[in-house]
Amino acid sequence: MSESENPTPKEHKLDLGAVIHSSAGILALMLGGLMYQYAWALILFAGLMILSAISATWISWAQDAWVPGHWLAMLPVMGVLLGYWVAPWGFTLAYVCLWIAFIHFIVRGMQKMHRQ
Image (cartoon, rainbow, N blue to C red; front, side, top):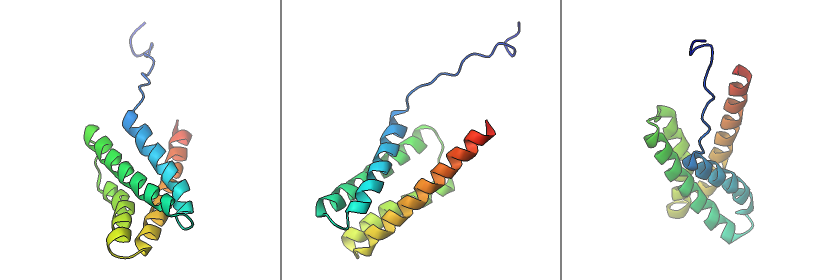
């Protein structure tokens, strides 16, 4: 039997950067909804957004996967910075951008599942 007829099983390696990034993003979605009621949620939301941006940059750099669209992924972090230094509406901008990114990744994941 040739090698092409006997494919080797794919290695499943846990990507720690992806786990950190996705966990921070999902927690930030939940905390973003609470940030309008609780001051502590706003602080945690902002921290998770920064952690998520750092992990996204690290993933993109480590996997040499930086594309122009990744600059758009930095909009939520820019919203957090605007919220702290310019106007409170920056936090709302960050939250809306985070939801857009989340929906985008869900759609892309579903598209990938349908192709397989």
